[in-house]
Length: 106
Image (cartoon, rainbow, N blue to C red; front, side, top):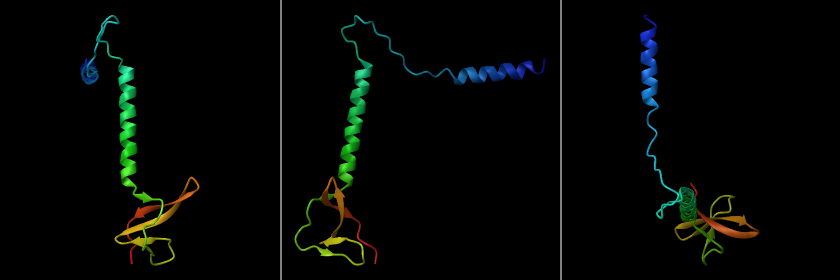
């Protein structure tokens, strides 16, 4: 009899933790206000991908050519100083671009 009570208690605890399923919406197929959840999901995913793309583009500041008056930075790294900005050259799709980087440490 002692082993039955803990087993029943364990079953009650486990069943109560599995009862949270979330909101369920039921619609008739003849309903004129029918919402296509898969289309909404595709739209949401596309919107999130666009936001991520914009965030990545804003994080990178790059130019196709350096402004006039840039000087090569110290050391052997190809870093150019243009006023307060520093740029490092990169090859992208066969074209040289310059990406803004942090100033090199002395």
